[in-house]
Image (cartoon, rainbow, N blue to C red; front, side):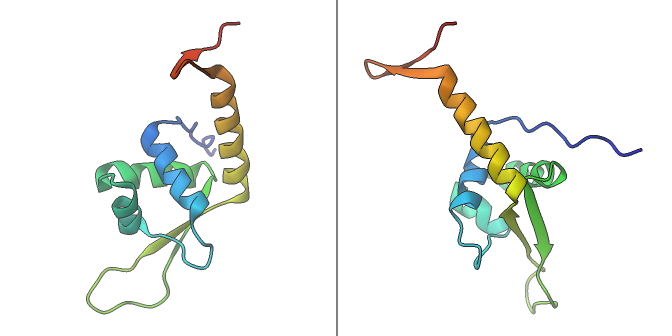
Length: 110
């Protein structure tokens, strides 16, 4: 029996990774190290996030073809259709709960 995909916690590091993937040209997908460089996050943060997002179906990962000389193979990542929909919904629900007030952000009361 397979386990359900992991629930994605929308932490700041997760949002940084998703924002980068959302803004990336599909013809030039980022790989793990590039994601760490562009987000400013360490590999101990980025790689577990990528693994969870891939297991949840939010992103797809594909190894580069061939064996490059002088460096390890890269795994390229891109946001899936499911990931785009889920991330848009997460961003919308986050915006619903918070409202700007006089330069501050306060929780909307129900």
